[in-house]
Length: 120
Image (cartoon, rainbow, N blue to C red; front, top):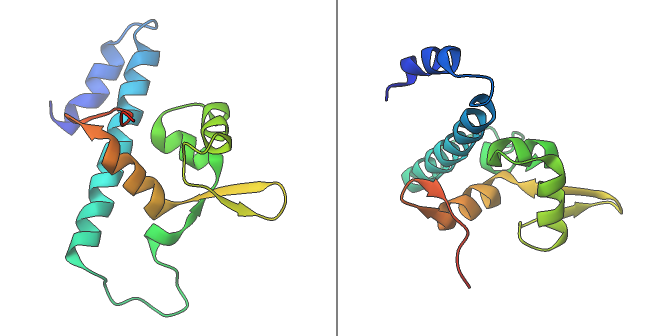
């Protein structure tokens, strides 16, 4: 399947098929971002302005994490609370996830092109 085919697939999907299609697209998006981050990391550091943080070091909000993983915000928060996601506490109530840590978390769980939790 080619990326240019996606709009036609979405247009032809029934209303019942759309949630599964959106979930599959979000999972593919997370895998693609993780691969892109890994590729950039493998190339080595690029010269950047000293005051600008690297994109992979950005602290993501839980809604952003949920979007990248294709899950609900509640699920992302629960995973962070249970220690299943690498979180950073910002103040007493705010929790963030470093973009590079999320990319690595996804990378180690990749299996056959899909997201799969690593077995203990």
